[in-house]
Image 1 (spheres, rainbow, N blue to C red):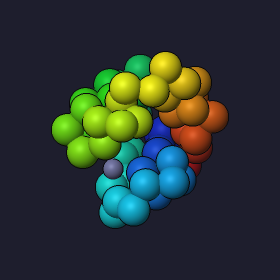
Image 2: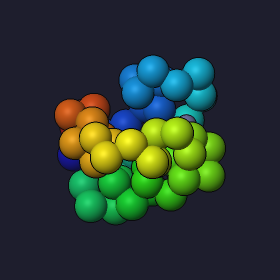
Image 3: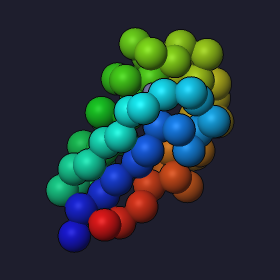
Image 4: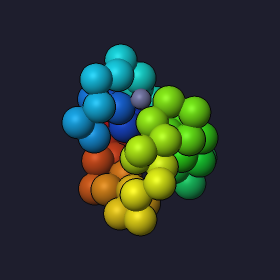
Length: 58
Ligand SMILES: [Zn+2]
């Protein structure tokens, strides 16, 4: 089982998709990506909670 988050699910027009074996690692990847590509999301205090709700297991 792996964990996956598709960036477009956040509402961003972004082709980014992340898949990792580890949920904590996925959150780290997504946060780093958000800081680089979506500073408006990274600055949102709800970002962490939103990421958790968008994580899928594949
Ligand atoms: Zn993105």
